[in-house]
Image (tube, protein in one colour):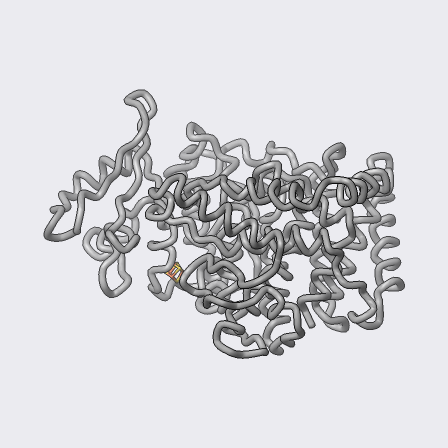
Length: 478
Ligand code: SF4
């Protein structure tokens, strides 16, 4: 690690600043459509419907690992029907066509868009002019649901905001916080949804689920499922420790994983690994700074990479913007240069953000509302318990790197919340700012293709190597 840190420092000193500014900005040109990837990312097309009807002759699907701290019911805000492109299967296409929708009267345009060559056809639901799904009505309801019933909707629509991930002998269920009802913890508890979730599991979980190996822990080491669960349980325990502030819980989690990565733990397995983890956790408690102010400020290079990261999370690439092709890419390139320099006004990435807010305005303390701890604690516990931060759920990234990316969600969310507050002429952030910013961030986290690129991952690794993730957590929690 020290060698890599040295390389990062040499890079910082010797590469001309102009080049440093242009290189990361160029990476922003990559724009890809953000589809609603709610089908299991680890299920192949052929295995996806293995449990389709869950008839008696088939084996029982693995038990579900449900988060007991999260509630959810749909409140028909229509957000998911505006944010995503919905890919549908050939079977779903035929079902919708058989429903006989009349374009121009019942729905504004023909319902299905076809793309790809004849041997590899792809189908997706069409959108209205304002970007909403062709089937979304003025009350925020789905016309397919209203006319033919919920089971006839495409699977992607029925599944959202739930996601299923492999967890060894069980299947972990997580939720997407891009849904405002999830962020608000609004609705029924997960246990009361067991029957519905079992039905969805039967449609999406492949037969070989229990044979899927655990995610790598580091690029070189893969623990067993039992050992992987020990690491995740330890992180989960740290995140729910109530006697320290939330940013210090993240600090302790990062501290433990950093030390673990430096230890040759591939030779320390089973019960000895559990003992090592406990030692590291005790060490984190002893080393925890008693005051967040004692954590140094983020480095200059760290701040630059952080701004570029936060700017990516603030983006809203829609079908309409992407149709503008290279003009849009050029605008993004110019915006990225501004994020790199961090001077002047922040380029407005979408309508939610006000114009003319200087970068410097977000660097003064904004405080945190009391409710912030509950929101972030629930977010991190749902993601950890739902295996929603590494492996197949997160671009096949190893566990430690995946947690580092997840830890960055905290300062990024607070940076975007500050931007929202500053746009409303406030110097304090509210719970609403945090909720809106978290929904925005989680919309991308693990789902935007750009975030799985090597360049994005290298940025996270560099922030970790510079020791800047904990510093950013402390800095933006002031
Ligand atoms: S974003 Fe959530 S609350 Fe809004 S329509 Fe979609 S599932 Fe329902």
